[in-house]
Amino acid sequence: MKEVLVLNQNFEPLNICSMRRAVTLLMLGKAEMVQVNDHRVMTITGGFEAPSVVRLRYGVRRPLPQIRVSRRAVLARDRYTCQYCGHTSRDLTVDHVVPRRRGGGDSWENLVACCRRCNLHKSDRTPNQANMKLARKPRRPNYIPYLSLAQYVKALSHEPWRDYLPIFEDLEMMEA
Image (cartoon, rainbow, N blue to C red):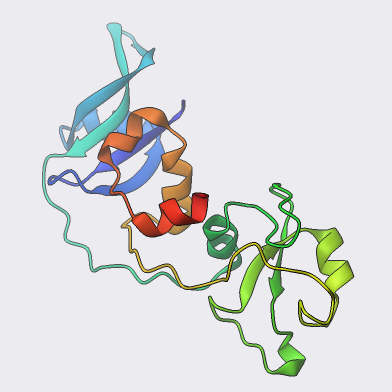
C-alpha cells in the first residue's frame, strides 16, 4: 500500500497522502506514526517500518466541508453500481432521473450512477416511461466526513484504516 491515512491531532481523518509525503512529515517531526504496514522504508542508514496511518503533532482547524454534487461524488455515493441493473464498474455515467429538458436539475435527488447500456436504453425518458426501476431512491448524503466522499469510500476499503474512520449509518444503508 503506497497511501497513508493522515489524522489530525484529535484523530479525525484529514487526508490520504502518498507514502513519500507521509515519510517527509515523519522526518520533519510534524507527524508521528500510529500504525505501520508490512513494508519497510529503506534509507542510507538502514530503514524503518512504513507507515499506514500517521497523526499530525499539531491540530489543523478546518471548516466543515460541504458535500458538493459532482460526478465523482455521485458515483461514490452509489458505490460505482448502476442504479438500474446493478452492474458494478468504474466505467459508469451519471444519469438524470428526470431529464433536464423535462425540468430535472443537477441535484443529489435527481442524479444516479448508470451504466452506458442502461443510459442508452433510458435515453431522454423518465424511468417509468422507459420501464426501468431504480434500485434505491437517490438522496443527498447527510454525513460530512473531512475526507471527500470518494476518498472516504476508498479509505473504507483499507481494513487497517477503518478504526480511524467515523461510521455513518447513512453510508451503511447505501451498502445494503
